Image (cartoon, rainbow, N blue to C red; front, side):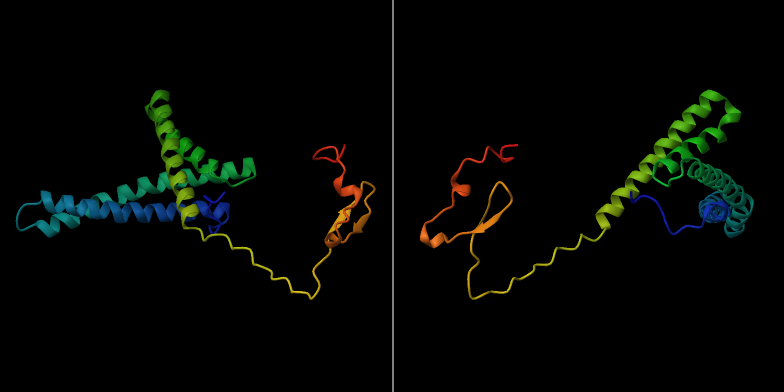
Length: 192
């Protein structure tokens, strides 16, 4: 299957890599959202200061939340790779379900179950889109090369194979057709 990233770090290091990447993504994305919120909610004359204060206050929280999600997801993914001994699209789907469930356990089993189902569904959609994009964007398979046969002066003579495996040549121009060719052979499998 093609939905698996083969250019990633090996499993123990992958967790740290994903924690850092998720923190950066959350901090930058949360910073952009909170900059807009801070600018919108600030009084006139303090617009830039309000936007920067909102970034300072909220971006690390959002980055930390993303880092926790990314770390748990990678830890579950590495654990499933070690248990199942294969890396296929089912590992991220199950990791998303486990991560969603574990993060909601403090609110009860029902909430954890709903969050696990949503996490698994979300990762299944992501993996499906990833597989679809990789199949659509993959180069077409190479076409088989045509091999040109050299033209010989004499045309090849037709051959017939007898039941005992002997190959005999006959002259099609003379009208003499061997009995092996004209007799009923017993169907497709030759009388087996």
